[in-house]
Image 1 (tube, rainbow, N blue to C red):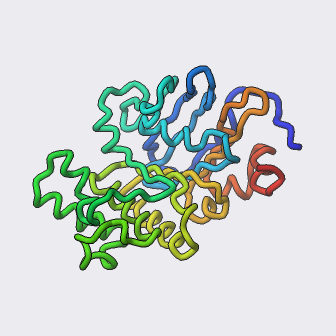
Image 2: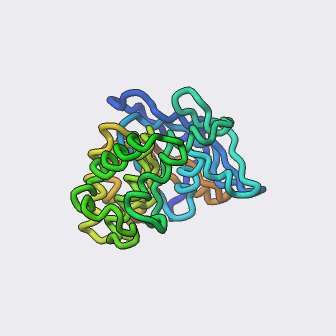
Length: 274
């Protein structure tokens, strides 16, 4: 069993060379479900227009951290966060502008959940809620499907039910629905775990393309996927005594996988635990 070193303050956060400006700054973030602490003192910066992967064993707080980034925990009674998550100068934890936040930070879940309506109406749903004019909505539908690499496959069937699409197509539809309102950050929680290898490859290729315009944060249990698609990786682990999730190491992906600075990171990526 790998024994964690004695606490010495902050986890290892190597200088991230060439990362460019930070899009999201997470500072001393802790999170609680009632009296249970799920995250402890998480601090790192997510670079703009890059892919950042969050890896670690089940139960270490990866998905919880992802949901804090756009305040989805508001839906959970007694859930609360302390510390700060700053996006473009505004703190997610304290903001009251939740509609603006949800438009700025989109979310793609593990399983695609198309609305029970047409392909076209799935994409148009959020723009209509925002009061966009019909011409702008039509343009958003076409552009979003094209950017999600789905337009050529569905352009002649936009009025068919979205549930008629394959699993991989439904996940790309979910991505198109997310980007229809022009977010700045896209959060993805295990977006390929329910897909076959061919559909997974399409999603991974799509993510790389989307970084021209968006900052992407992906939670994945698949370390090979993290190594393939991400520019930076955060490794999280549950504290053996206190049982909260904490950030162990954050670095450029190649550095973290090839030259980890913490023995627990090395043990995890070499398969000795987790």
